[in-house]
Length: 195
Length: 195
Image (cartoon, rainbow over all chains, first blue to last red; front, side, top):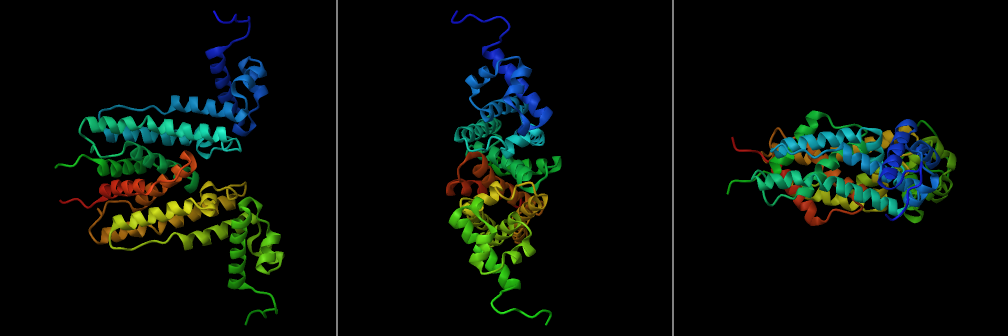
């Protein structure tokens, strides 16, 4: 036993989860620009100092909360078909990007600030977030559905890029028909070719 | 003759070009966040009021200057091969996005602000900028190189999206080898199929 827990004060994994949940609740209630550490601490039932000790700054707390939430909300399917899996993944990502959390993650509102460590968190987030989806392509290669020369990262980044450019630069979401068409184009481009 | 030109005072097309050139010179000299209308006016040799009359606000002036510059810097090739044309286009766009002007255009630094008219300018800019590249795909369809079902906008947005997601979320540029691979994947995905 390293340390004795004090009565009425949560810590460790429980503290982390309570604070992240309270942070996301605040994001949803008041908008990401209005979240304050004092209010998060009160809602989570922890001391403000516990938050500062663990996360140091508000942007880092927000980054951690957003990353955790996103990982829960964009599942990676495994249906046995690359095309179906990619349509599912792209649809889930597009839906997430249309939520306030997803929109903040894409536009990098708070996370974009002057803090380079926060910029790193955000870039690392997207690398991880997209990298897990590469398994969809690798499984297709293992099944002989996808050409072994195909680049899983490129496939995922192309679909992710489409969603991002729509959200940030065209100001609208992709329709289901557009997602279907995009996936078909990419899947045709990476299909295993007869020798 | 609608109006008499006053001596020593440029106007019309000449005024517009002088002001846009002075704006871009300021962007390059001091950075986009430090551009001031008074200094642009002095450098262009026009009255500040002429700038306010025509552009109303600094963000709109910057948007107009950036759009004009970009249109000059990302040419649309026509080599007779969709693949070669798309590699050229994507390379030019990636190179532009790596410049201070391009970076500002992608991140929307100034252009993102509260002014909805400016957000519209930026979205309209990307729509126009990418739409002209759709001709690459359409010419390929006319030559029988590209499937008639292929969606030219989707092709261009996929390549543009790849560049954007790299610049904004992964914090790095695409390499020439990556551009080549991406174009090959897309071109294979839209190739005309034998019946």
